[in-house]
Image 1: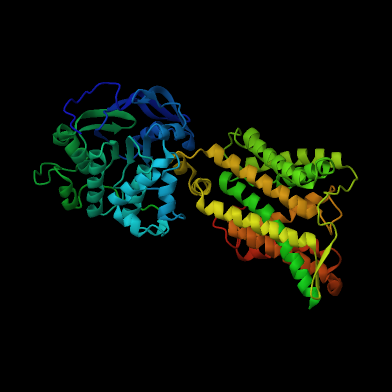
Image 2 (image 1 turned 90 degrees about the vertical axis):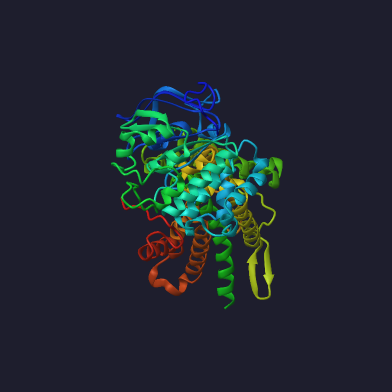
Length: 280
Length: 296
């Protein structure tokens, strides 16, 4: 994941160009362009309603579930056009999303959830191998294989949601707020996992409100506000910028809490504006 | 006591046939959230094909064609109407299925006319004697076939990729789509299977002691609606239990109606709906259902 060049070649990895999305008359994204080079972790930050989830829905092709659609622009992954493609084609193309709020199939067992993740895989025969890799990454899922997913803790559900996505052996993983509502310790573990998944060669687009964690993982970052990219740059630079520090890290002038590593996320005090939410 | 056992055996047998119908109704609801009011006409399609073909191609081939035909009609309804209708509410689709039902039933009853069509089954009117208890062979066949089909269906639902895709879609269709599950395929498969099960049910609703397929067969099929509803619309277990409850209730009420003259004639036909109403008053989501239907 050595990406020193902040502006890598335009056609590799995920490329979003001048994307506009609307839900009926409501415009949710305007002129959004971003680039996730192959092998990188790139993060998109922004508050509630900034359009982060909309962006991921546009990539995965699930806008129609919310009665929305792409009105302009283009999305491609490794030069294959994704905008306009069916969700199953996006998954088969190697781009898999872990949706916000985990959305595990609560009435199915952990094992069945993992099987569901392999349904749209490019090569179904590789499911056994993928399963082994997932269980190695998350041993707790093997212990709970026969339990209903709804009975897992929030952190375990997030692991299951990520593991389920990995069952399709994605080349690119889209993560929508994976630390939402998790205890700081668990959030740090998820962050470590994301780093490991990336180290094994999967490109990651991470959408987060937890800016400190996201900036510590990513090499490049975009800030979305009311449907537009207002700021972008290498993650380290953004983490230093006053604007981001004030608005997303909740730091005025306190050098003690530098968002340098995931450990500091775990240790960070409660005033960090991480919104927790109950999800059923 | 003998009468009671005979009635009970008949009731269970008819109950498994209702369960076949209710199961189709439930899987359509699970996969597409549509209440399929055209289910009785799917059944009629299957029965009609068997009745028309058995004389020329033989019973077993006719049965296979009937099953395939009803499955095809189910898949076509999904493909031509359900999939294309871009409506906000699933109740609109439910009303569309009422329209489909009227069209199919009208055409088929016109074809059938005043006839009573035999289905050419090999069991005829033979009766099996188990000690003092006598039971029609058709009823034994119904029990065996329905049990085998239901077991096969439930195993597939639990263990195959198709079953996983189906349950994932039923639970959260958007997330299932994110796994690459094609919703169109899942729902078309549900409609086709529901059609096939309905065709098998048609066979056993029309054989001895029923005279055969006629225009009133859809009314018999209607009794599976309370079975699906009282079991809980989104529960396969509920469909089975509901089918059995309706079958046994109907058989016992009809069998003992001479002892209950104060209730009048034909209580057996009314009983399924009475049972449904009582159960819904106590458990609005049905016995095993998780989704309570909104009152409209």
